[in-house]
Length: 252
Image (cartoon, rainbow, N blue to C red):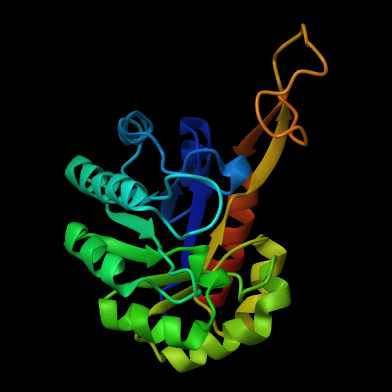
């Protein structure tokens, strides 16, 4: 029977512990999930490690935006991979594209060398690549373990057809992990449609800031984002997703 994997993406100690308590198999550790996730700082990793031994895969993404990086950014990416390997992270989540939308094989090969002994996931750079089938085969040739994808759509339910095709064509050579918009109901819908056995979720809830005094009209970043809302992982949302997955693998 296939192993079903539930991964939670988190960017705080609180969210990490909620995901672990809810039954996630592993964490994708990020910084700034509100902008899609960036490389987390090592102190966050170390603090989470004090409280739980859940597997942690560190996202390595030096900035918001596309996945075509300068030479200086590539140096930062390599150093981050090496640092999380040194700290004991079980995996890294990486991806670099060329300007034409193909996978940057030269740089990816060097990152695979830097990540020797770690599990490696190709992140959602895959969802904006030019040819998902070619990129999947290249990822397999590199020895990458997992591809995180929404089926090249904003939300995974819209990408169900491609997800199904990728699962079939991968034929067990690489894990296709479904992400973007995942919750218990989505897993219940997509697992039979796609055959996917790995899912990635945030379980996000928006919490009101504890600030009582609020200076309106002043933004520290994107004007569309409130400075008085905090994103956290909901333990119960993760638990519901875990229960659905356990039902598919016969644990319930």
